[in-house]
Figure (cartoon, rainbow, N blue to C red):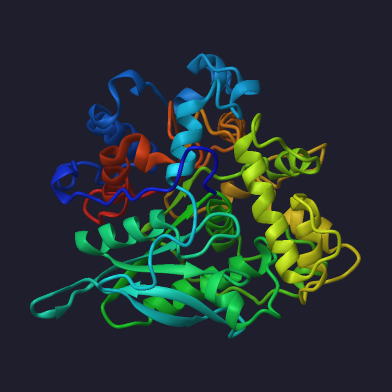
Length: 429
């Protein structure tokens, strides 16, 4: 989503700059306690003028009510989309987003096809961690792109290459409707979480069946972070939840009672109030006044045009409707069912179902106060409702939307590495 004077850049992981917690330092701790200890150890890697952060306990007051995130950071939410008032947030957003930049081949990675829950082939780039003696036994981390993204984004390549070098197996995955998966199976519509959630659990199961793979972990950005949160929720509830309407449940495969993504789930810049984003995108946005929203509308319009949908526009709501109604889930209520499935916070008196109360693996949400697309206040609103010790969150002062590498590269990579390190990550129970 490059726009204006900014363009996507590469921010590779520098192993020498990773700060690691002492082995066993967080043994037996919940993910919330782990986050406190880890942030305390890493906060010196943040820019000196941007070291302030809100951790899980800081997101609510002593009565359990959400704090005013923007007041805590001295920000005007109305100005987050403007270059004049949120230059750094928009710059970091653009520097970490984009496409057609990461190259056709990544050293150490192979292009593979992984079966989805219904056998649909999903494109991925898999890098096995190996040493002189061969492939090592290690955890496998799955990385998802942002909304309508693919593996051409340098953010994905940089993270995948860095994690592989550090000691993990890595799978950069293109879900149905994305990238090479969409090119090979254009008839398989993107359902914006329902079928993709089942695909992610199937991918986790497939990976665990491969030689040398121990646990699996999951990282998502933007709407990919929404997918990651849905996977953590659905793994815990296995479809038995008020957010899964019987109409939809009849179309979804039963989920075996095994645990997925035990190494943990990281959600960077999730769109927790996605329906409010849909409202904003129903009207045309100015490239000058709101470049991030306008850039997103270009992506949506290009998708609608390429798919031959009627009246192509920048409306994400219209795009979702077109995709859902050509999917195998299609029925007169498919939009209502799909929104209920992915909703993480109430919208116009419609329940979210407190989904993350069901998560049984460590889940970490990382957001930026100056995010121009997905307002950070939603993180505080979420944690005023979620009491699950397996779920933790942090709001940093900068990073824009998924722009944490350009904002604070060493902090970002150190947080990811420590989260997935088997000896250091919190237990989440």
